[in-house]
Amino acid sequence: AELKDEQLYSQGLERPEGDFCPICTLPIPFRISDHSVFMACCMKTICHGCVIASQKRGMFDCAFCRTPTPIAGNDADVLTTFQTRVAKKDPTAIHCLGQKYFFGNLGLQKDVRKAVELYTEAAELGSVEALFSLGNLYFRGDGVRGDKAKAAELFEKAAMQG
Image (cartoon, rainbow, N blue to C red; front, side):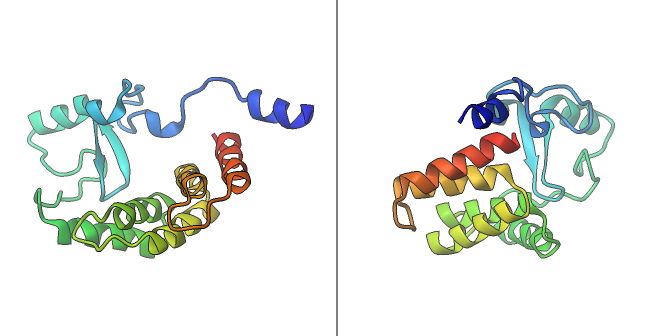
């Protein structure tokens, strides 16, 4: 038990890679969703400062990958972007698509079973967020048989991976 605790708690208090803007490399202030935008084209979270700076230079595409951004409200284009990334086995995209199925966003029918499949696939590919989402499902019993021990195992794996 001591070795397990040592592994779990010895990793320090560093913020995960996703908490930093990939352009300016500065940490994005907390409540990250209030200070950044998630780009479906490259699955990157970009700080508002970098987005504004690129727009001031006349670049209205994605500030990171320069892909033209889908028109706001056009769910079909955003869904196509997600599915393209999922086909390339991008764990972030697979987890995000799972979220869309879980909540019934982007015009998708709410399908918890499909969300569980996608979360599982993303977790197998190394997504910490997918492990955490799966842990929540098992903890609450959403779409799967409630299993607190399995939830604790998934939460622990997510914590160990960062």
